[in-house]
Image (cartoon, rainbow, N blue to C red):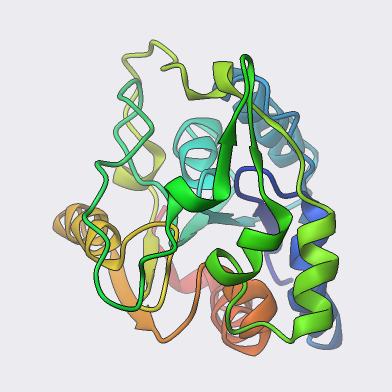
Length: 239
């Protein structure tokens, strides 16, 4: 029986983000679940993932994007059925440590970065939908990109607060794959490479794709191929 793919979206997004990947997985007989996180606190988001994993019958593969990496790092701790973690241009931190990666200086061709797309309010951060087209979705089909931009939601600033824990990050105990998106304009590719190197030192596999920050929309086949390969061969993973 294939493992269930459990998808954890990034900040400002929702479970719809994964719909193209999930359709491809359906054709391969790989069951999937896409979470809708409240994006109020990291603890609340992690609890949603933990609860979803508890409801999965059999093995699970957790796929996280961007901010969702922090959720997976915490929410998958101790879940006995998680056989693999996949981080797609996602934040990879130690449990109980700050969730935001250090900023990189923008380089030529990547001038439109976080500061150009994120709007600060007193209690939330929101995304400029028009700017998101160039930052999140530059390689996504335009009408699909606009549909995605229209779905972006506010992210509570309380979500950035660290959750105090002495637990070991899930990626240190569960087989992990980190995917660097080399054309990302939101999380600098070199920042991703730094996080991937940390994961690799703990035994993770590292891949690099020529993709923007949204491979689930621009390259759903790559994501589906990776997830299906792991979900259909979980017996090969230790633990």
